[in-house]
Length: 567
Image 1: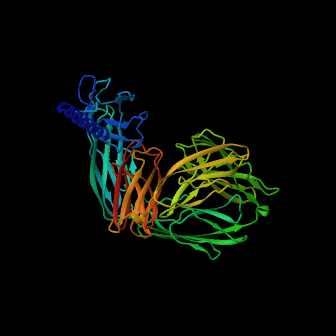
Image 2: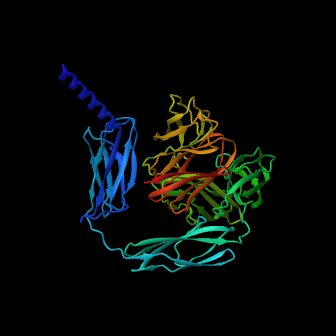
Image 3: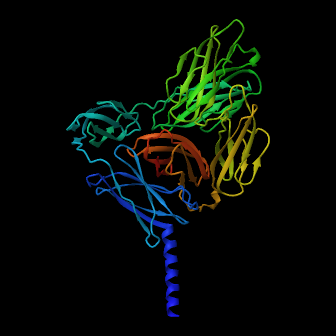
């Protein structure tokens, strides 16, 4: 009887330790060169095996860096059983080395070592150094760095969000203040070093801002106009626009900070449109433009275009742009919406190669021999989907549990058109008929929902896209919470885009959302008015290089930040 009891206790203990180990695993190991020397600061990725039957934890991706001894370690936790892990790093030539790690149930740890196929080479020595000469708000930077080999690259960060790769740049600061200017050098043998110095600016430029906008008529409704503020206008990175006021000339106006609004006029006529912009530093600029609304049948010229995406190469066609009888189009200007140079001339059907898939605002301006000028802009989808039709949609939370969807960027070829849209909102509710382009949906509770849009064209093409959206009920957050808090960044690590959840305890809080690299250089930013509750913003990340970044929310209540990693 004693032996039976002992055996029962042993089996119970073994079962307990196995379940504990399956939820939390310590992964560690060394990365070394072929000669046995340690590889320091080497990135090692730990992830759950995609072919594992475990699906309760979702994807796990951790990135760790080796210390001076080549050692790394990481703790992987899950609310379900972990049955296998993959640990990977890159060889000297960039080839991915993957170890599939399994482990015995009696030990909550796993070891994964790597040996690279090369030996370390001498990178020599290098020391970054520079001097500065300041005249008012203009600073001359002189590179005095020393290397044992040839200096291959220099990167300057001026501390105000701008950078340069010139050997000895001259930089003008927009405002007074103390800036941390940094120089990073790289030698031809791979040695790198960096140095930062404080630069004091006591005299600044007068804040500069310039109100500017384009007005374009909708291709389907001649009384509906789209306005694009900020076209051909740049503002300093540290002085963003915080307020835009529009007056449409028909008695209606729009307050807030909407950059690209639309307005529907009641009738044809002549209207004076007014825009007033105000920046964070207090700079104010105003602009009035006259727009003339005429029935397309009597218009002297009409600009429009269609497009066909082929991966990131997009073919445009403006042959349907027209001029009145006896007149002709003599000039076309294409603005691609991706910061590349505009195409000027009279090209009817150009092609443009985009660096990444995404949504771009493309504008075509035409002029005729008699002087008629028109501009037409529309969203263009550069997609990597191989199909004759492409469903796409964006979304924005407009209330704690209400979401607005926009599918205007869905695409069909020139000789085809989208005739049906079916929406699945992820909560067992649907729109199964019709062609609703911009639906809104009220969710009963907070959570993560998978929303799907399926389109069908007149020629029979059908395609579907699904996305995860976040609906956060702000009433679940304690009133004693911080005024501003970053609730979550998803996914992390990121690839093409990242969804941010930012909680605000108050309504109408002006905020700047920004991404910085680890050197403090601003890589992306936007201005947004935060509403009370959790605010959802989808941020593009496809343009970021692989590495660590910092997401920041800047408001009058301070700066909140959270780290993420771009794969």
